[in-house]
Length: 165
Image (cartoon, rainbow, N blue to C red; front, side):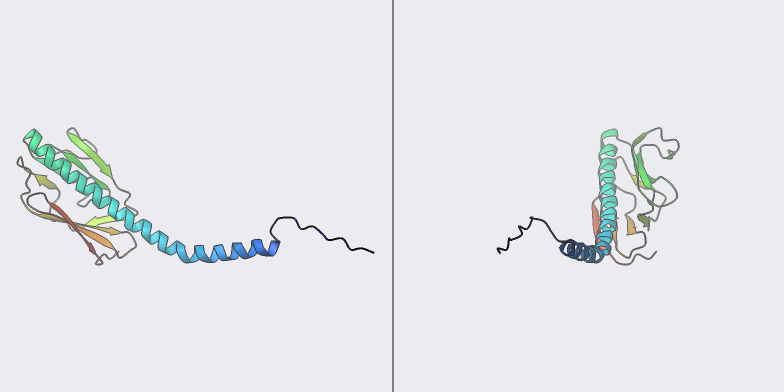
């Protein structure tokens, strides 16, 4: 009597598949909180970069048009919801007749504070009357970035951990 060998098909056993699923689940559980924090930090960084672009636009427009240019919050006294760049002091988000650009932020992920005035104003020679600092922070997080705008319009940024929510 001869024994025949069973030929094994090239697949995975149920045990091997379950083991891979368990290992992948453990790795995702470890990585997910870190990835969520990374996303929040990137949202803050994006808001800061967009404000830097708005400052550059405002300075350029002030020189080109030879008149004051304003960066104003869309709502309230901070940039949590975004801002508009305009050549008219009385412009608002609802009625912006001389807007150069409007930038909206998702205020559920980023908030701002620390402005001393109601807006940032560049004079005809692209300078500020007073230096300004704006704080951008993660909503529900401790990390943030301070944005300092000097009298000359030069923008610097520095990380901070003084955000409280």
